[in-house]
Image 1 (spheres, helix red, strand yellow):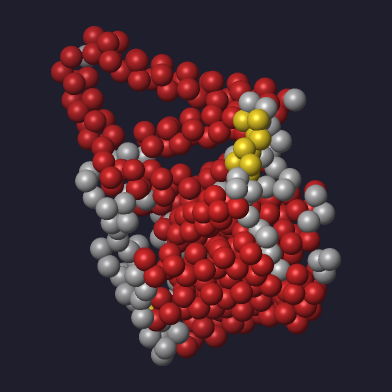
Image 2: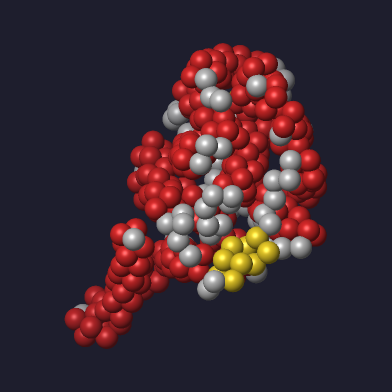
Length: 376
C-alpha cells in the first residue's frame, strides 16, 4: 500500500539528488552543448535522470522489498534503461544500440513479470488475442516506440516532465479505481520525483534530465500503460499518452514524405512549432501540458468504450494534428492569402470555404460522438 511519507521521501530525495547532480555533472562531462536544434544558448548540465530514478528506486528497495521481488523484471528492465541513458549522457549511444537495450528490458518485463500486450482489444464484438511470439513483438514495438517518443519531445525546459506528470496522474487514477498497487505506487513515486526535478528544470533550466531521465520515464510509462490494459480498452491508451505518440508519428511521416530518414533530427516537433507561435518557453510548455491533460481526460472518459470507436476518434485527432502541424501548411497559407488578395471574395467562396467546412464537420463529428459516449 502507498504511504504518504514514502511519497514525501521520494520528493525530498529527488530534490537533494537533483541539486547534487546540478553541482557535479559538469565535472563528469555531463553537459548539454547547444546546437542548431537547441532552445538554450549556453552549455547546461544534464543527467538529472540519475536523481529522478535513484530517488524512487531507493524508496522501493528500502521500504517495498516485497514489491521489488514481485516485479523484479520491471526493476531489472528499468536499471538497464537507466544505465544506457547514463552512458548516453556521458559518451553518446547510437539509436540502434538504444533499441537493443530497450528490447532487452522488454524481455525482462515480458518473461519475468508477464507484463505484456496479450490482446489488440475487442473490435465489433470480436476479441483479438495474440499468440505468445506476436504478443512479445507487439509489446517490444510498443515499449521501444513510446520510450523513444518521450525522448523526442524532451526539447523545452520542463516539457517532458510536465507531460509525464499528466500521464502518470491519469494512470494513478486508473490504478486507484481498480485497486492496482503497481500502477498507484509507480505513478505516485514518479510524479513526486519529477515534481522535485522541475524545480530545477523550469525555464530557465539549471539542469536537463538527459536520456538517463527521458528514457526511464518513457519506459516506465509504457509499462504502466501495458498494466492498465487489464482495466481499460487498449485504444484508450492512445489518448492517455497522446502527445508523444502524435508528435512522433506526424514528424516521422513528414520526414518520409520529404525523402528523409524518419530518425533525421530537425525542428519540426510540436514544441518547436508552439514555441514559434507563442514565443515563450513557459507558455509553450503549459499549452502542451494542457493539451495532454485534455487528451488524458478524453482517454479516461472513453476508457470502457468499444475499441473501434475510440480508435476512430483518435484517428480523426491524428489527422487534424498532421494537417495543422504540417510546416508546408505555412507555405500554403501564404499562397492562400496572396490569392485572396488577388481574387477577393470569389476565391474565398470557391476554395477557402471547402477547407473550413471540412474542418468544422470533422470537429463536430468527433465532438458529437465523444459527447454521446460520455453521456452513456
